[in-house]
Every structure is written in C-alpha cells, then in structure tokens.
Image 1 (cartoon, rainbow, N blue to C red):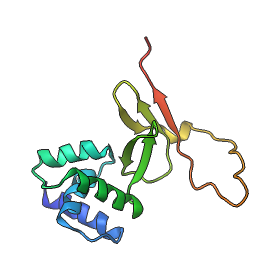
Image 2 (image 1 turned 90 degrees about the vertical axis):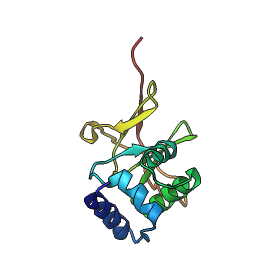
Image 3 (image 1 turned 45 degrees about the vertical axis):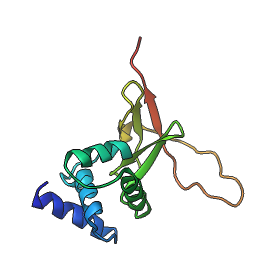
Length: 139
C-alpha cells in the first residue's frame, strides 16, 4: 500500500460520507486504491486483506461491504441467488459470469439493447435491471 492508494481510498470514503476507520480504509484501498474497478466476493477481499496483513475478520468484511453498498459506492450482483459479487463500478452495466471459473466481469454496455421492460405491477416501480450473462466453455 502506498500513500497515494491510501489517499484514493480515503477520498472514496469521504465522498460517500463514510467515516474512514482503519478497517474501512484498508478494504477501500484494496478495492479502489489503484484507480481500477474490481469485482470481488467477501471471501476474496478477506483473503486479499489477510495476505496484506490487515487485521480484519470475515464478519467485518461483510459488514463493510454492506455499508459501502448502502452508501452507493459499491454495487452488489447476486449470482445463483446465493453468491454475491461486489462491483466498484456503480454505473448501470451488464456482466458476464464465467461459470467454469466462478468469476464476474463487465460485459460491453454498448452491445446490449433492451427495447422494452414489462410494466411494473400496480403500486411499485422498477428500481433497477441487472443483466448477468452466464458463460461456459464449449465442450
């Protein structure tokens, strides 16, 4: 970790109005410290934090990811109804899920065309549309 990556992480938290605790800064630095977008699971982020010597528990990682999502600086993408990935790119965009690898990546937004959505039931509105395109290697 560098002073620059710590600054990027602290600024990311400050822009969201989040208090920069030691654990939040350490996890934010892993997520955005190099200025690149990431797709992580709680477990993969925990492993990265441990390998860098950060003193955080898996429960803290889960709680921190939830706080980041609530603050709008992370997007949660659920695959198979049970596996959650967290994306630092919060703009609307589709994803590829690589079934053989259990990996999520961005899909090209400019190639996706949704012409019409079904009308929402009475009394509710569509909050978002998540597009996850599942991929597997040809046999």
